Length: 268
Image 1 (spheres, one colour):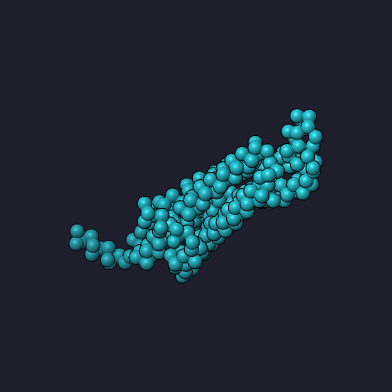
Image 2 (tube, rainbow, N blue to C red; image 1 turned 90 degrees about the vertical axis):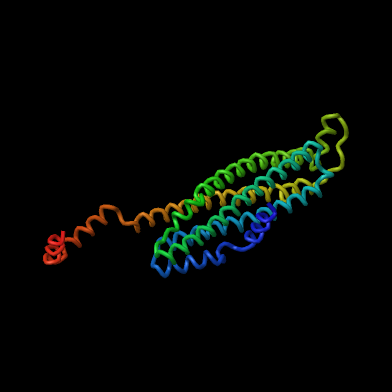
């Protein structure tokens, strides 16, 4: 188990676009004039690399939100403290799961690239689509797309609650503790007018950005699936059909000299 984890950690830190196997495959595709496969594979790499950059940025932003929430602890009710704690933990979990899925996809693409390079060198055939399919890259991308969609829904629900907390702060003049004091018939505490703006700028706005970024990642995962479909189509177009092979064989037979055919018939 430890060996697997350490291998993944080393791999994860390197960008996919700079991976030696990926770079070599792109070079071979260009050399073999496989323009469509080159274009689709390049776009696939770009989609996955962009998703990773966005995910890393989102994880960093969530850590900053957690720090801001810590500074707001004195202005939140026990209920809202628990809510923010649960929300950040949930988002952190789903982002971690997305990162694991993305790392697995990167790993599979590298192995597929290595397999495709070996195929081109040994047989001259470009089986990139087959390699990707065997490693389940399309299935993994669809699973990531579904997971990201669910993550957006989790964030939407959380943002709605954060907006409600901000409204509570505004309604009671900027201090959420006054809600309970007003309900108990007690005098309001001194207003802290900066708290409403603090929740909005330090918590609500970042959560909205995280939601939007995850939404973009979901679209990129869909685009990556589209590139795989393009690779499949290009592979099918390059693969000769049985009918074409038969016609080619028959044409060769017709073109052969009659003397050769007679000699073969006599020999039989």
